Length: 268
Ligand code: HPA
Image (cartoon, rainbow, N blue to C red; front, side):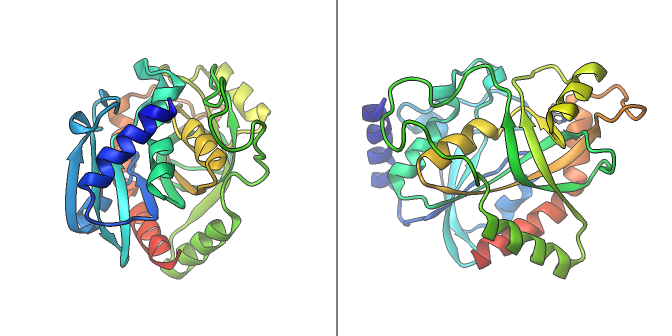
């Protein structure tokens, strides 16, 4: 696998005109951040050797390079979800390539179901910690770099969390903080499953992010994550939901999410 990672990084280095230390996964809620990127140039996933291809609706696949908040950045438009059928090596492959490219900080976003009783649809939650409920671990197998038994005591960088809280306060944007529980999907949860995940300690539940954050930590990349609550897994408030409704709720919260991320990248 290390050979594949190096081959992909070598190809990208040959194409790159900048030297980003900051990467962003443009998950749900952050799509419009693209319009803020200056001096943009792009590489389609289909052109990148060894890169998996994105299939889910609402996610197109390319790497976007340019400047955001005065910083050189690398943005992933379209991520690889476990429920699409990729194995964990594929889901996290781009993160390992990022390490090889010299990325030091990773910003991620996602959509999730709120399980904390105080959460409302459209709220943003700064991720302070996570619970890994995926059935396969991304670090299972030969340890190609980093610690065999990586520490996860602060998977989400405290300094970046504090800065984001400051920014939200300045901008008058309401933010929640809490634990994101990652599970494989693709079904949304039954009421009994939401209840179980809440008892386990999750404030929100979603189908991404956790594998990428584990691999980033293993690689020594600092992480900041933010989640948009698109539906509620709270007893008495659970209603039928669809992917389209998740998208609509996420789109509505997009300006708030984008404002925080852009300013945080500038100050990081
Ligand atoms: N559960 C899992 N994933 C999700 C949800 C949810 O309720 N909402 C958005 N992504």
